[in-house]
Length: 461
Image (tube, rainbow, N blue to C red; front, side, top):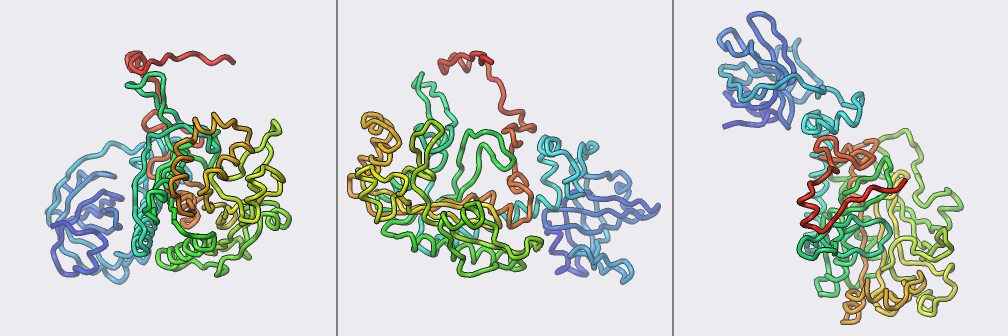
């Protein structure tokens, strides 16, 4: 039975079966040496003259090898890899699949290759050690989160990816309906409404590793689809949510990244006003040594303004229309006065100068939620049309509740010391939202458009 390459060190003197890719090849006449790679690591395999197929091997061939695990001579030890004190003396070789010449190299860190080329051949790009480590670490973080939340009584609940278009801060991706021509689903910008409805349902503690979709303008660290750790809790106050999340963040670092140091525990707290006055940003980088890649400076930013002015001199929410104001500002919200002075229960967590999460205590009173939309200029009829389901739900015995969402891609990229989130996503798109591997977005045929009742019109420029 095949074993992983990393396990050969436990099998010295035994015959083992390995399978993987030819990572490097050196032909010394009677002897052929290869580096064999699987997900767990690399090992040197030695083929003698009795294994004739070895001369056929080329880079990235997929092979199966049987042989004896031996200690390498002292002067041949490779201290750069965990298996470097051992090698496999091959007795049998099976070529499972040949490979054409690689369009990109996979034995470097990949930074020297253009990103569009790497994304076009992402199934090859993921073979490189750096990206494999990123994907493995992402898995470990998510597994830790799931275990942590389960131990504390949270339920992992999936929510729909086909929903209703509502104004939540960014443009929706719309999905036309064939059965309901002229009507559209929207892909969720976040599970915000659904997780609140789960609290109304009495499930009390929810979390999800959630896929989210936002049709935003292009920017280097944005993706059309991304992943959040999403959670919501009933019968809580701001301190309860912040305490739980701080504990989870600390435990992830200690468990998965023991080599990293958290600069300050408990995390420092700054009001929005203090952060802007002192650091000119609401996601300050508090590291005392910004050259230390293993130094993590978390902080909380609280007491945000609830509303801000738009370019056309109207009010809009700064974070989330479903947030509650701080208790001392509830009367002002209900009366729709002193709008600029109202502070929200929003709390953001920043890490090394980037926001990695944000949440709030929610408005569980339907009249207070109505007031938010009235401040923003919505008429009552429009409020009911867009959010009637939420108002009705909140009026049916909704408990006080609050939660948070982390940008999981960003959090992982910071922990992995990567320059952007695309390096920790298996199949990302470019900064312009294009997938060079699949060639998407792409045109569709007239038959599909006719079934949906759609017609493409050229934009006027």
